[in-house]
Each structure stands twice: as structure tokens, then as C-alpha cells.
Image: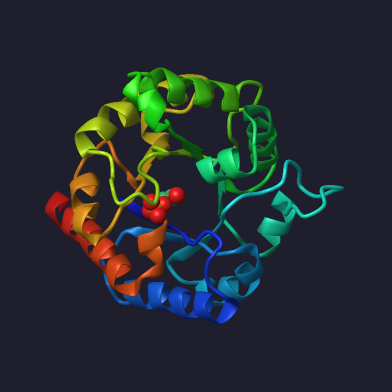
Amino acid sequence: MKTIIANWKMNLGIRESLALARHAVFTLQGRELVPQIVICPSFLAMFEVHKIVARTRVALGAQDCGPDRFGSYTGAIGTAQLEDVEAKYVIVGHSERRLAFGESDDLIKEKLKAISDSDLQPILCLGDTAEVKEANLTLPTVIGQLRRALSGVNPPKRKEFWIAYEPVWAIGSKTPALPLEVVPICKALREEAAKLTGLSLDKIKLFYGGSVVGDNAYLFLREPEIDGLLVGGASLKIKEFDAIVAAAVEVLQAQG
Ligand code: PGA
């Protein structure tokens, strides 16, 4: 299976979100071999979007969550509230949260603990900056992020653990990483995550994110080490989104 995760970030009003969600549902309708699609709208749009995707093959995800099920965390959304709108997935530790909002490894760990106590599936984001890449420190950096995020967190109750490798330098830059660079990183992260969680290798899913568009999606998706894509900007454009889904269909067909 291949999965496309659409991260709409701080974009789209409620009406536009509904239109895009309807389009995603429509894209999968009546087709046999299709990727799994997870859409992550703004918190404000989630309640309305959940009505559109309910009982369809499109799943709902959140872009972030608070460090508990509910409680005194002004401005945050708890994991229990996300379950309330039938979200199934939640992105945690996105580099924009780490950099623009100063989220620490400790906070990300608290969020992962809260997710562990919920029915949600975490999508943990890890990534290197341009400086780290230049210093040839990508692998130790992302492995370190993974270890710190998972230290003291109970192995997930869920059957799978999802990780997105998103180089900070590639996000929104029109310069994606090369599949050739991404594959060994995914492989190493999968092995480390299996050790840390006690899950088998096939229960650890690895995604790539950073300037994915219709034209390059196939090159990532055809790699067996890459289970899918986390897409920002291109997921807001119907033409690009359709091309990414078409690339996934092509890969699935080739795999038989
Ligand atoms: P991008 O963002 O596809 O716009 O580069 C990816 C992400 O931040 O998840």
C-alpha cells in the first residue's frame, strides 16, 4: 500500500476545505487500486470535513495536538477532542512546529505519550537542516530525534508507527531531496524505530515530505522503502494532487 498525506497547514477557509475534501473522496470513488489518502485540514475545518469523509476511503488527520487528552492548555487541541471528530491520524513534531513555535523534543515526547493513550495514529516528523546536511550529520540527527521522541513513551497500542522524514531545507523550497538520499535514511529509521517500539519492520511506515509535486511523486513512490508522501503546498492544488495520486496508482499497478 502507498499513502498520500495532505498537510494543508494554515491554509484554506472552511468552504475551500470542504471542496478539496469532496474532491479527494471523489478521486477514490469506484476505483479499485488506489492509495490511502489522509487529509489534515486546519482544526477549524476538521469538524465539517469529518462529515464529508465519514464512511469514505479518505481518512482524517490533525496537523498537531496538545500534550494531553484534554485539560488546561489554552489554545491547544487535545487528543480526546480529535477522537471526537473521528480523526485517525495526527502529525507531531513537524519542523514548522519545532522552529516557528519552539517545540522541544520533550514536548514532542509528551504529545506522543498523549497519542499513545488515544486511538490516534502518530505521524512523527523528523528532519535535518541545511547546515546539518552540509556537515554530513543527517543520519545521526534524525536518529537522535527519533530516540528522544520515543524515550519513555510506551510502545504504541496501535499496530503501526508512522514516521515522516522531512528535510527542513526541502520543505516549501522547490528543491526536494533525491530518492537516492531518502531511501537509506528511511531504512535506518525503520530499523531503529522497530528496535525502540518492539514492532516488526513492516509495522513501521516511512514517508518522505519536502517539495513533492506531481512530477516527482513517482520517483519516491516507486521505492519499496518509501511507504508514501507527506505533501504540503501541492496538496492544495487539485491538478498537482491528482497527479500525485495518479503516480501512486501507477506504482500500485506496476506492483500488481
Ligand atoms: P511542502 O511541505 O510539500 O510544501 O514542501 C511539506 C510539509 O511541510 O509537510
